[in-house]
Length: 235
Image (cartoon, rainbow, N blue to C red; front, side, top):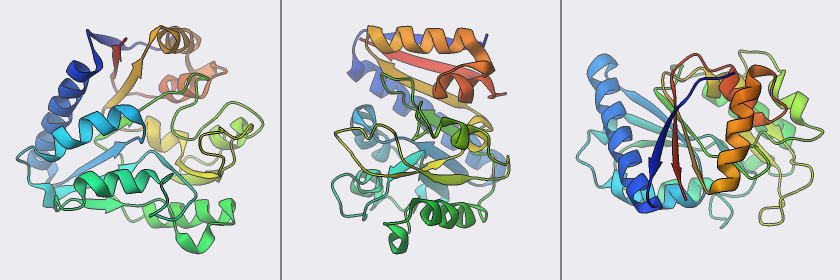
């Protein structure tokens, strides 16, 4: 079983404010300790609430690197791009924004993954924070259950990123992905998981009970996490 501390909120707005507060604290601590912060965030609906609040905080953004847990293999100006969301809210902050997508490889997920992996080798790991979301099927980042699950979780530990094709393709974003690897996500100094709704609470609870042998991607990632895990939940 994987241990996690749960934080429950009456509504998603209150949860979003607390997430922004906690990320601000982590950034300040990292800058004070080592001069720079590496923060990994997801795309999705909750970040859309958190990012405007966080971006308005009085931080030395020039010492912050923001990176995504995963992104769709599309151009940066495509509405499906998670990097577009990051740019919208933090593009004028002074933070370093890191895209996982090399637009030279939009038609080749394997090459796109290798390009991202090579790019990320120049950064100082582990990350100070990895913020994970979770889908109804237990996927996290772009590590999905299905035929590509083993490829995603069993690669070399030094690999930072890889290209994957979810099967079946999610109808809202039917494209390949580039995702950070299990070892990269699990090695962060702090890991937070943010979910909403009763169904996701049940899925995550089951995944935590299964631990590192979980059949669900989120369970596998959290099962290999050595840092403390904080779960933020709201209806």
